[in-house]
Length: 369
Ligand SMILES: Cc1cc2nc3c(=O)[nH]c(=O)nc-3n(C[C@H](O)[C@H](O)[C@H](O)COP(=O)(O)OP(=O)(O)OC[C@H]3O[C@@H](n4cnc5c(N)ncnc54)[C@H](O)[C@@H]3O)c2cc1C
Image (cartoon, rainbow, N blue to C red; front, top):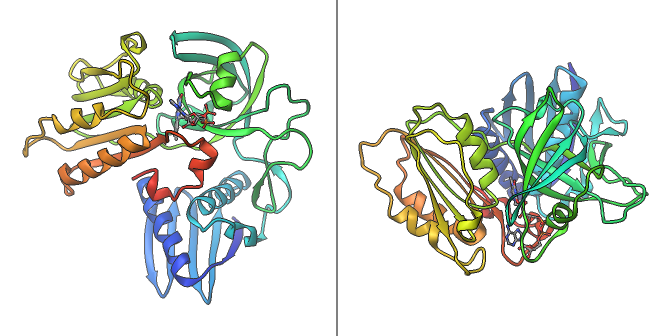
C-alpha cells in the first residue's frame, strides 16, 4: 500500500464545512462515508481508504491506496476539492508527508491533437482530436474533462504537473487556461475523441480556440469526471446548448425501453440537431429566438408544466444550464421531487457575465447540487 498524509490548518467551523461538502460530493460518487465521532470520518472508495480528522485547528487526510497512480489521483482529488471547498488562499498552507512527493505529470493528463473541425450547427463546432491511451476516459460515468488551452501563438507550453502533492503549472513557458467540457464521443481503439464547443458571442479562450482550430494544434486534457446517469424508471433532462453534448451522449447509452422527457434550450431552430434517443423519451427543443443566452425562463416553464403523477416510477432528474436557470430549477426541483424515490444532478455549466475562472471562485454549493 502507498500512504500519504495531507495537513491543512483551518479553524474548526471551516474545517467542518469543508468535510461536510466533501462527504456530500463523494457520497454522490458512490464513496462509503462513515462518521467515527470526535471529528473523525472514514471515506472508502474502490480500493482507497481515507481517514479525515479535525483536531486543534488542523484538517488532516490520511490516505492508503494500492498503487502509485491511484495515489497521485487521490492527491490531485484532495487538491481539487480543497481548492473548491476551502476558503480562498487556505490551500497555500497545505503540506504533505508520505509517498509520491516527487514532481510528476498530473494523473491521466493527455495531449490531444486536432484532427478535424466541423460545424454540427452554426454555433456548435465539433473538434475531433487524436490522443494516446484514451481508454480511461471512455467510461459513460466519466463524461466531463478539463481542457488546457494554450494561449494563442504560445511557444513552449507549460503543462500542469503534481509537485509536492499540489497541482502546479510550471513557472516557465506559457500557461494554458483551463475550461470544463464534455466528451461527446470517444473511440479508444482508434485513439480519437470529439468535443462539441458552443461558439458564444463573447468568445472566451475555449470558444475562441474552437472557432479557429486547425489540424495539428495541441491542447491538454485531464480528468474531471462525473456526470454518469443513475438507473431510474423515468428520466428528465433539462439543459441549454452547453449541456447538449452530455445529454446527447447519455441518451445514446440509455436502454431502448427507457422513458422520460428531455428539454433543450438553444438559440433557434437552426441550432437543434438530430439526437439518438429511446422512442419513449421525446426531446423538446425550446428556442430563445433572439433573446440572449441565460436570459430566458423557457426551461423553468417546461419544468413547471411537467406532469409528475404521485405514483410515477423513480425519477432521475438531470439539469445543466446557465446559473440563473440552474438556481430556479434547483428550487423548483426541491419542492417537487420525492426524497424517498427520486434522484438528481442539478448543475450550473456557466454564468452570464463571468468567465470560468471567476466562476470557479464561487462557493461550490452555488454551482451544483
Ligand atoms: C462539467 C461541465 C461540462 C461542460 N461541457 C461543455 C461542452 O461540452 N460544450 C460547451 O460548449 N460548453 C460546456 N461547458 C460550459 C463551458 O465550460 C463554459 O461555457 C465556459 O465558460 C466556456 O469557456 P470560454 O473560454 O469559451 O468562455 P469564458 O472565458 O469562460 O467566458 C467568457 C464569457 O462568455 C460567457 N459565456 C460562457 N459560456 C457561454 C455560453 N455557452 N453562451 C453565452 N455566453 C457564454 C461568460 O459568461 C463570459 O462572459 C461545460 C461546463 C461544465 C461545468
